[in-house]
Length: 356
Ligand SMILES: Nc1nc2c(ncn2[C@@H]2O[C@H](COP(=O)(O)OP(=O)(O)OP(=O)(O)O)[C@@H](O)[C@H]2O)c(=O)[nH]1
Ligand SMILES: [Mg+2]
Image (cartoon, rainbow, N blue to C red; front, side):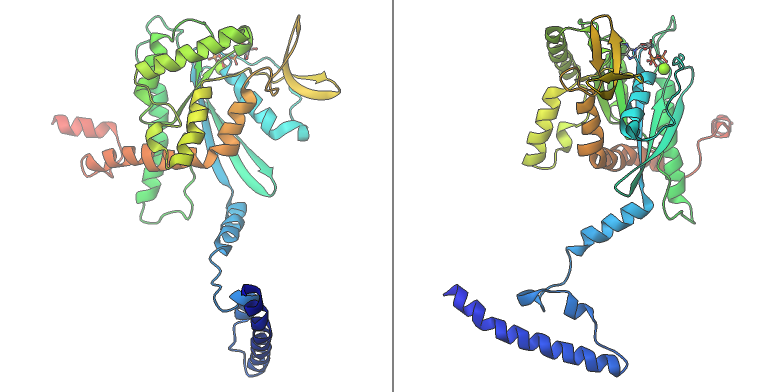
């Protein structure tokens, strides 16, 4: 029954289309008032009902391709856990073996200051400015109290910069985003408990930045040790009340929750870093050469680096940015605007004045 009524409608639609063409034709001759959109927009029966809301996706895609976007990752943890190495691994695996400018073979020096390295990566016409903020490892000093302070300061400075741009009378069309979208926290592969400092750092910073804990140098553990240690760390984080990304409270719906539950159960990712390339089965791979073989960084059977990268870039990049903007930055902003009318820059003069 249904089918016949549709076929009956078809000649009518054809007639209507014919009239529209004629109208468009004559309108074009008379100075053209007809919108060509009304003709080309709908196919068949939706000719008059189609508004074109779905084209917004295409419009957004075009805009994003034109402007590109920023994504900023920070690495933090004890000295010597391979943070700087992982920064290089991320870039190399991302920039991939496509570009030739990576032949440097020097040893990575110890990091002594907070340093941001950026590269513009382009894929499928979309540009991403990936910035990785490398930090000096802590735990070297005799007194390690407050070693999170410079890191916390850096994170807040980026929020402050963004806030200043936002409250300017003449705002930039697009504010450059240097805010840290995620902080990879390196856990030492001890096989024992988390260190006091690890707990302290994550506790303090988890409300101002997305923390993603990772187990460093996981090639130093056996498969069983790794599984056990991961479980233990998860338990300790839970007992310590430490919220890491993706935070349960920000799951948006059931689908989100079930996806993120799987990820939370697989965390902290056990990673291996390297910026050296080796030939394995005729392919060049990033790896670590040992006396008993090559640990391939991007091989999911060897470690979870690829999982981490896919999680950061392929599945949660947009969400990391949104949580940073809507939750962490918002918290900072509200706090700043509540202080002394808010918009004055933090300066040393303020404290002197208030002492008078
Ligand atoms: N076994 C193993 N060694 C690693 C790994 N990643 C880095 N290393 C080695 O660990 C040493 C320290 O690496 P870095 O990347 O300089 O460590 P870092 O965390 O940046 O150190 P600081 O700058 O002092 O904080 C180097 O000799 C690296 O080759 C890894 O995944 N596994
Ligand atoms: Mg370093």
